[in-house]
Length: 631
Image (tube, rainbow, N blue to C red; front, side, top):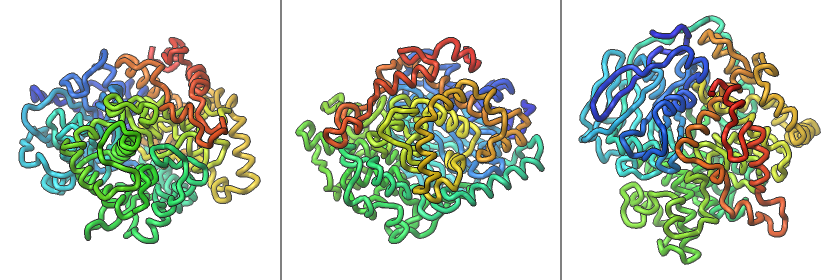
């Protein structure tokens, strides 16, 4: 093992599908200290190889699977792994995180990461164990669904697979492990372009600990914190992510009718409460997760994974569809064929509005959804109108027009939050490295109505808070844990009674906190050289790895990762002009005549650039890169 740190296996595997060469990829302890793991590690590997604009489907593009040090360590919600590549949706870097068991088993095989280069000339799957790496024929798997593929590969170890959508290079095809998806950015399409149907991993290599006893004690306290918190201990287990839909309605942030409005009269028919009452068989969770936010529902006589919030929103209100049964069916079909439910839902809504405005005669209409199962199948196989839907909203707009209401950023469709009621979320969408992503944006909507309730229709403090949240979420993700574990950073008593004077005062203070938060953003290591008791990740990391870790250092690591992805995107051709939103959101008021119900993106972006330490064109300044050891 070539590392002095616990939590790491000490090896990264590089496989070339063209030459069938297998070797170790160099990764040092200095790299581990700077980039930690997960998506930040993957960005560093990609930046070593991507020197300019790169065709996502070319041999030059890499597919980089990575784990974090906490992955599989016994920390709560740590069955997380990441996959990064140049996205066929955006042409820029994309990363996608998954809770399936593949990452755990990749580490048990002895590897912290897997770098896949080149292209196979025939369908293959990779069989990785702690003894050898084998290229196996995947002809018998080609055309199989994601569940069929995993069944045929057997029960041993973990799998990362694609379905027919990935084989046919649907631009938003996903990679699946168990029933969980590495959903966004078209990872499955890149895997399909390489004719790589699956990767299997298994082994018995142990994970080493710097201090096993202290780590076990830290994890015990962490689990107790999660179980006693109102979100991770009660709301998510009972209602899953869909618990948020009612709050989105209340705050006018529920994407409705292709983001034409932020609320809908039939919202409750597709809510988490409705699912719990009429559809829920049981709740479930990823490997080693105490939160258990997953839903199990019945579709066609089978117990299958239920839809998450984003799926409910984008296949429900955004299409004017109030039939929860249908959403459950479509979610299952999209998973089986291997497609991102979010990009499919966003693209479908855009196509419906194109039809409505006479720009494309595709036969799709808001509220008329009986033909959607056939449309899903046609999209996965690129038949009929499905061949165009498979390209996503950006390319549909390039062909038919309608750019003002093509709801994407940089080519990636927006999540289900309508940002005219949450401007911090709108800013985050615009500047996120992977496009219209609610997570890479910093998930500011949590502070603007979903958890706390600071004023969502003001610019005040939004840039500084978005930067802090982006840095935090990048760091937590790179560590190898689920982002939901960061919910506990908001004290539970503020969420138990959201109408209390204390909660109200907190929301007012947040609106005024920008200057103080910005001081923390710039001087993280100096301002926060401690373990935050509400964010136990740092103590778990320190006792596992032996690295010096603190709240400030985790934030600084996240900042390094965000800026590293930005640099790579600039190398791939990104300009600051692309850090924007569709004009429906920036020029049309959500509530007619009320100017505060549109997103003032120019002003928000200018503030964000300045506070990020970027120049007026969105390029990180030399002093920023020097401070982050990226110079």
